Length: 117
Length: 113
Image 1 (cartoon, rainbow over the protein chains, first blue to last red):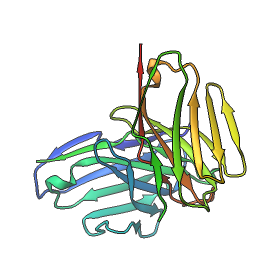
Image 2 (cartoon, rainbow over the protein chains, first blue to last red):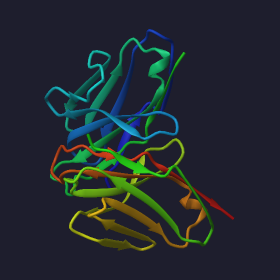
Image 3 (tube, rainbow over the protein chains, first blue to last red):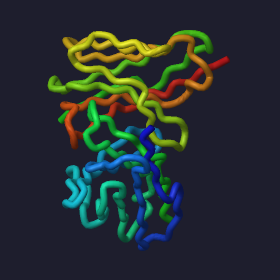
Image 4 (cartoon, each protein chain N blue to C red):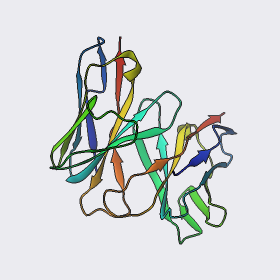
C-alpha cells in the first residue's frame, strides 16, 4: 500500500518559535503533496499545494510567509510554521498524490498536533 | 466556491445500517470520495465513485450518487463499534494530477451496543 508519514506526531512550542513538520511518502513518489489544517470537530481546510521543485500554491487567506512549504524531493515536503502563536495551534495533515496514480487518489499522513503556548 | 455539506452527527445501534448523507454544489465534480477519520489520526480512503455512476458497492459499503440533486450517500451495512469515526465526503473536479479535494464538514458516527 501507499504509506505517508508525518513527523513529529505531536509538538508543543513556545509562542514566537518556529516549528517544522515533515511529510514523507514512504513507498512511492509524489510529485504533488497537499497540506491541510483541521480545527477541533471541523473539516480539513486546504492550506497549500506543494509541487516538487517549484513554489507552493497557497489558498486564499493563508499567509505564505508564515507557513513556509518546501518540496525538495519526490518523497519529502516540509511545512514550517514561523513565529508560531497560540492561534496556530491545530492539527496539520499532509497528503501525497502518487505519481501516475489514478482517480486523483491522495494518501494521507497521520497528522501532527501543534500546540503553541 | 465549492461547498460540501454533511449532517454533523449520526448515532446507530450495532448491527443496524448507517446512512451518511452529503450534498455538494460544484456541478463539475467528477470524482466523489468517502474518507474515514479515527480520533487523532489521518484520513483513510474508504471508497470513491465517478460522476457517471449511480451506485457502487464494496463489501459493507454502498455509495449512491444522485447527480441531478448533487446528493451523495454512504451506507454501511451491519455497522460495528469499529465503524465509530468521523466520515468525510469530498469532491474533486478531475481525477488528474494535482487537483485538490474539497471536503465536507464531516459526520461523526457513533455506534452503540
